[in-house]
Length: 239
Length: 283
Ligand SMILES: Nc1ncnc2c1ncn2[C@@H]1O[C@H](COP(=O)(O)OP(=O)(O)O)[C@@H](O)[C@H]1O
Ligand SMILES: [Mg+2]
Image 1: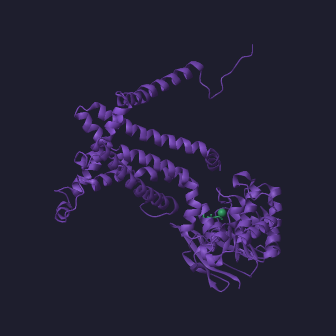
Image 2: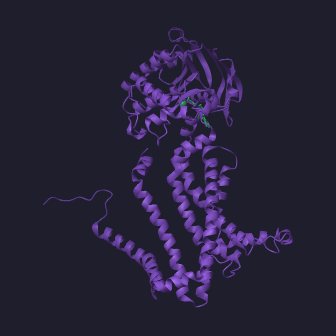
């Protein structure tokens, strides 16, 4: 039931954005992809979410041939750096979206959807804001809505692309603590992209340091910090 | 006395007054005056005469034909326009720039040329002329040709309105919808369409105005058969050429009224949904 990413490669035109990235994460693990801008973190995450297609390599997750499934059926919640909230929908409708689009036989009743939305609002600490539109929220609040929306579908995988990148330091810290709490509560396998090593080390069980489309080093935060395997990793961590 | 400085973006008063006067004069002389004259001529002999002129069978036939042409061209171009804008902005594929250029073609080509293209294709001496004649199908100098010509010249309106809008909105919301389990059609209906509805409405209104008013392309393929293949603009010219000035101005006034109605509708919707429009632009 673990997540196995095996030699995933992807070119944009002739430019190799991913050069055979591999890592294994246990079911329910919290992995952080850490690396400088342009190292391929977003590309790898989007491949896991089904928003981009790998040229070669494979991903197995929960005994599924993950890359053969379309994004729609992966049931992987995705949180984007720029929120990507539905701007014409209220907070409540944003969160309920993934439940409302289910086929009729799997769609909860509207009472159940309402209940679930209320629970999620509570979980991300936004109770009382359900009738607002995204444009009426602060950045931190928007990202909380995005998180609740991704969790509403009871995802088997949670993918976050520098979700707190646009927020100030204090809000970032608050949100990452909340994210960890929510992860531990839901037990969902999580991949979290960031270029901020402090954030990666604070929140993840496993850190993959990326460079030029490859994973330079992979391991527990303490190990990576104590034994940087390459000059690049030790330099990146001391920066 | 306190000295008043001009803001960096502020021009001197005399210049602003001058420019304002020029603009107003232009609008008055080139737009309002002719429009007023059309209505004055149309109602010169009273509202009764206006009605009699409209109830003329050939005039009614031209109104009906114009409405048929617009009624077919506008919905089709709405679907084409949405599909084209969707492909161009939500997907990457080779030949994309070429497709965008192609969409603009009806704008850059003179309507007369557009009409002639149809003569070349469907005319008696054209590519399909023979087989069409053998099967007794009439396209040129008949309603189908008029509809085709109208579709051609009004094709870009919806697509042109939507492409910049959809390009500006990007694919983020559609991608989010996909990860949340929505099908392509659900995504279109629940995410894309609500985001483009205002642009779509503008495009459709403009497309409709042009469909009703198109002269050049339709003129080439129509054959000007009174009461059969004359649209409103063509009928105006026919009446005018026959020195039937009251009749010509009556139909012209009717066309102008349809245009004003379109404008009024657009303003009404803008006013009614001002908040929503502002919210959509703010984000
Ligand atoms: N759609 C794309 N087209 C072309 N090049 C891209 C595209 N997406 C990413 N790239 C390139 O691939 C490399 C890796 O990008 P990305 O995965 O976004 O890196 P990161 O998220 O680590 O900053 C970058 O050099 C970027 O310019
Ligand atoms: Mg990135």
